[in-house]
Length: 374
Image (cartoon, rainbow, N blue to C red; front, side, top):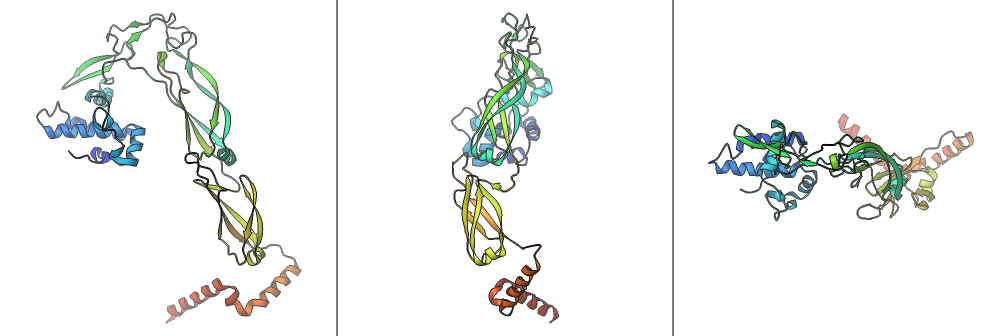
């Protein structure tokens, strides 16, 4: 069977969340499962196709790669479809485990990995562009020092007699034979006779941890930095989760960022716009001179090469885009008003030459009314 789009296989939109994916897969798996269609080769192919699609789309990393590269992102050399390492029991048990009170698997103890944590860090634009090292305080669940995370007072654990140390028990539910987490050991495969008095057998205790986080230069709003092993400790010595530091860049008074480029508005006097001149322009690395040519119109954008942000990924240096805004003078004195009136009179007769845009606009207005009245 030729490979189809995974989203098409499951019948979901490309922005479908995990519950939607699971519901769609469950429906297809129930319909095409080999136990229900023992002599239907097409049904078995549909089941494998849905299994492959769900295995890729439920994993955030695999899904991101698939969204970008399509089927080329899968690993055909790995065991199973699309680089899926496992058998039908693994993924099918993952879907139907919640129905029967457990999870499917290969018959081995399941350690409950510690939860990942997220921390939002607010930065000024200058800090995000230059990079910064900051101390943060994280309330978390850390490994119990009294028992070294084992959960046992004496450090000893015995094999669970209910599941024989594999962490799962098999149950028969109608046409399905599924494995579920052992209710006695909670999937660990071992039991503790003498729980630690400090953590009550959990292997972890509440604590507040101080961490030094290095934010690389060039990060942007919404970027995440992963600190491996800095999340919550796992249950009874299980692996620790990760900490994700999410960057939030505060709005800046002068600059707006778009990718690696910076944008700013530069107000200029109408005399400078007409006669030309030179302005001092602020950048994140100090001031630079910007030459304004004569007859500059409002809205003109000047590009200052290399005065933007250096990308944290490609190290490409962005530019600074300066948009001119001609400022009308206010609170003029009588003398200034008289000078402006004199200036106005001096070129009023040659309006076309000095104000080409106004003349063109007035011609357009005249043509419009002529057409309306004809």
